[in-house]
Amino acid sequence: MSSSIRTKRARALVSAAVVVALTGVAGCNDDNGDSEGKGKESPSSSAPGAPSDSGLPGSLTGQKLSWKSCPAPSTLQGGGGKAPGSAWQCTTMRVPLDYAKPDGETIDLALIRSKATEPSKRIGSLIFNFGGPGGSGVSTLPAFGSDYQRLRARYDLVSFDPRGVGESAGVKCQSDRELDASDSVDGSPDDAAELAAATADQKNFVAACEKNSGKVLPHVDTVSAARDMDLMRGVLGDKKLYYFGISYGTELGGVYAHLYPKNVGRVVLDAVVDPTEDPERGNLGQAKGFQLALDNYLKDCTANALTCPLGSDPDKAEQKIVSLLKRLDKQPLPTKSGRELTQDQAVSGIAAALYSKDTWQYLTMGLTEALHAGHGNLLLLLADSMSGRDQNGHYSNQGPANVAINCVDDKQRYTVADVKAKMPEYRKASPVFGEYLAWGMLACTDWPVAGRTDHPEVSAPGSAPILVVGNTGDPATPYEGARKMVKALGEGVGVELTNKGEGHGAYNGGNDCTTKTVDDYLLKGKVPADGKVCS
Image (cartoon, rainbow, N blue to C red; front, side, top):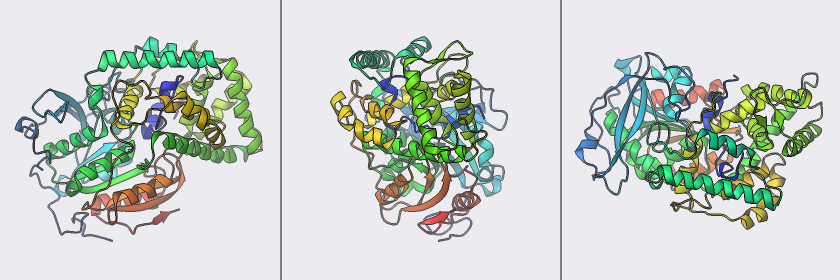
């Protein structure tokens, strides 16, 4: 989320672990049984799995991947880092640009892997999607690789840049300078002049996307990405899909299960996007989710009033944040970079720090700096992590990709009148985040490609059990979404696991019960009882 209407979009804050990484501030089956309970399979089988799209040519289904040492992440992937090291290998895989024309033009998807450390016990490839949409799996998986070492024992860890993302025909719109210039545009307009400026900024962004990426825009939808994953499954040699989806990655995993229920092996969906909501309700749910996370942070901060810049009363503390944001609307704060911290960037920075309890300390530091020193350095750094801007002023393509994927997926196109009608409900949901997420309803209004569906189809009758993990304090994908996903997947498919904790996602949140339950499912095929709770 950054400074103009176009970035206050549905699921704008669902960046999954990608955001936290970029902040830089810090019923049981046999051990080798498949999760369907249909007996044993050879965990180290190398027999290729046939992709289920029968119309694909042999040049795609039979392609051999050439794995090589990985370069450092590109600017589009987030940049700013070193090559991931010798444990990681990279390659590309060809997929159809348009699945309606399987013999037509192709694009290359960027892939990364780290091979299983116990090859004699290897189950297959565990494919990760870390969310967004728009996050680069090629840059994110190595950054979190240590969190998945137990899984690496029996799986090749694999991730990829989905179509439209990073180095997979990444959507390109405006230049770095143009994106910086849009920081001066108020994303929560208070009058006609500000609304006109925000609308003009939106139109300029859309025109740039159409000019620079028009060929790709119709084909970055989630259904096509799910078809890419089935081709990937086959090319990697797996009969079943083994998958770990986080945030938007849960939507992608649900869509895959709907399309290919018989190909589902062991699938984990963590930090679950509610598949029943339209963008308006999704944005409202996020307003409530981030408000809950902020409330929990304020209780924690004010309990230590000597170090909390907001005092000892949580209600008064929230009002101090609201007052700070109002002041920033008229007078941004200076930073040592020469840029200014605007109202919108402060909201983004606060949101970024709420993705994990581990980053609450940086929110305290940022608020202390803003309220008592009159500078916005840390909040701006956190805001940059949300927009994909590195310290050299270069942007990844996570923002444009997010808009492009959401807008080709979602049919809904809202108006200014729709926003104004819903604004009271959004403000009630969150005095800090409500207005910004309400204006996000306009993100796709002028988009040049029509949206596909009212909401994703994830029903998956006949699928193996899918483990769905919800975190009670998740700000970006509220906990209720997990139960909605379980119901939508269908009876006997979704298995709900509740993690009582804070932050976006549960597996890496420090709860041993949750981690062990997920590991036992992925490594041993042990399906927990539906409704299990880890406190």
